[in-house]
Image 1 (spheres, rainbow, N blue to C red):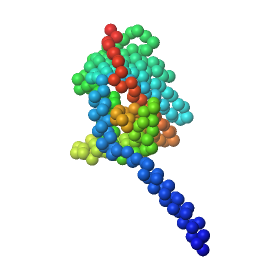
Image 2 (cartoon, rainbow, N blue to C red):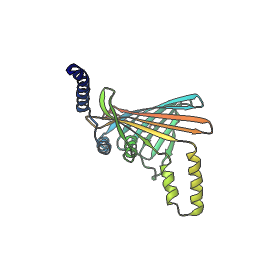
Image 3 (cartoon, rainbow, N blue to C red):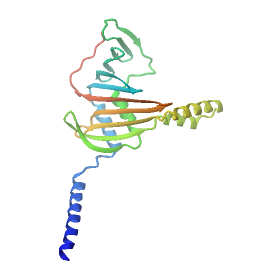
Image 4 (cartoon, rainbow, N blue to C red):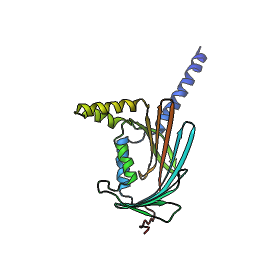
Length: 242
């Protein structure tokens, strides 16, 4: 009888001890809001970084890919080169002036961007969007390029802004038009999932994933963009090409 009780009790005690050890060794990670705030402060103090962004789009069984690589220098300089099946492009933006060309050509086009569209730091934009995102949850920590990172995941309602516009619109005709647009968009079954990796020691964002999925009238589409940030505060020079 005593042997029977021990055989029943010992496995249960062992399982309890293992569970206790696992709980004691795990870390839930910081509050998402606090983490994003620290990441925003960290990136605001960075003078330069490099970017790589591969994009994959799959529709009707066909996949297309492109990759953009570039550099950012605070406060308002950015150089990007995009390579893909639809051609290669290169652009340089300095303040409100943008230089653009086919990457295989020496002919630059110059554009003056309206003051209403001021230069924006890409990493800052991403973190601002995450700051307004509800439902970020901690995922298992991961290393990105040998840097230990907090890993968080969440989803976005891609129609949230449109829903708010419908709710606030007071003009009946305008409201009806917006409602029809909303209903059409809802039929597309769109969803957006985001993930972010932020360094544990310096709170600098190392990666950001963005995946859009939608279905409409038997057609399925998925687009994935992966922002990779690296070489923080390394020497980078971006000058006008002309």
